[in-house]
Every structure is written in C-alpha cells, then in structure tokens.
Length: 207
Image (spheres, rainbow, N blue to C red):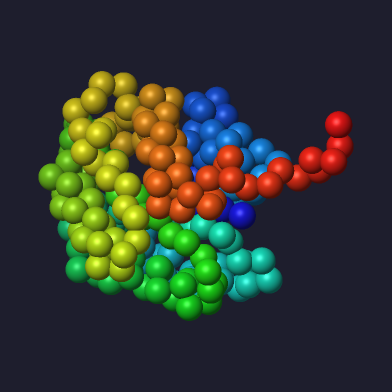
C-alpha cells in the first residue's frame, strides 16, 4: 500500500478528469498495490502533526510500504495569513512526520515532495508568493538530506512553465503529468523493489 498525505494538491491528485498524479499512480499499480489519498485542502504541516496519532492508528494493522508527503504550500503563506507556519516550525514538523511514522511503521519507506512553484497573481498576491515557496521547497530538500529520505523538487521544474498551474496555485493536467513522472522515477530509483514492475499482481492464476 502507498499512502499519500498532503494538502489540496494531493487531494486533487485523485481527480481523474485532470489525470491527477495519484490517479495515474493508481493505474500504474493496478492489481499490485493500493494507492490511498489522504490529501486535505487547507492542511498545513502543523495540522498533520496534530493528526498524526489518528493517522498512525488508522494504518497500524496494515502499515503502508511507502508514504509520500507533499506539504508546504499553505505553510508558506505570508505571515499575515492564518495558514502561515514559520519555516523552522515547518522543517521540525516534516522531521516529526517522518520520524514518528518510521518508529510506528517499521520498514515503511518515505518520499518527500516539495511544494510546487506558485504564480504571484492578483488573486493570491496577499497570501502566496513564489519567493516564499522557493524558501520552503529548499528547506524541505534540506530536511530530506538530513534524514536520508528522497526528495522530489517540484518548485524548480514547475518554475515559470506555462500551463502547469490551474489558478496559479493548483496543478493542471500538465502539472500532474510532471509530478507523476517524477514520483514514479523516484520510486524506481530509490526503492526499486517497490516499482510497479517488481510487485506481484493479484489473481495472476486467473486467465
């Protein structure tokens, strides 16, 4: 089982109409592994830490083989926003999310995904700025390096690329395709034993 936690970009990744990256990954793992989406719109790393005991209890009987954590967009909101989480707190929260799950789910692998780039449009200019997104993405990469956990940098490849953000904040079909490609490549490189081609398929005895 693959468990994906995050904010709205993860929640929306289940949308088949926009070919969300979780929907695409579920297709890759058809009959091999369940891909569970626990992305929640508006969530920050602090909210996830507060919900950590609940999440661990939910999966205690069947720990996931892989957990992906894509969080940071809301954390990086400007300090005047109620969403804002200070960058040092954000980094500490990422460490907690990985380390406490590692202790609870022995053998579970982890992949961190940085937040994507954002466009500082008129609609979001008082809440989100791309310079803040970059800083939080860089801190996520540092946490991954410190914990020896693979990190997928989504800020850099989505920076200034047309048609990857729907409302200057959320992923379009093109953006989802980029995330899916990078996520699958990261699994195949970092955890080849969990790659779709390496897992047994259910009901192989049925013609």
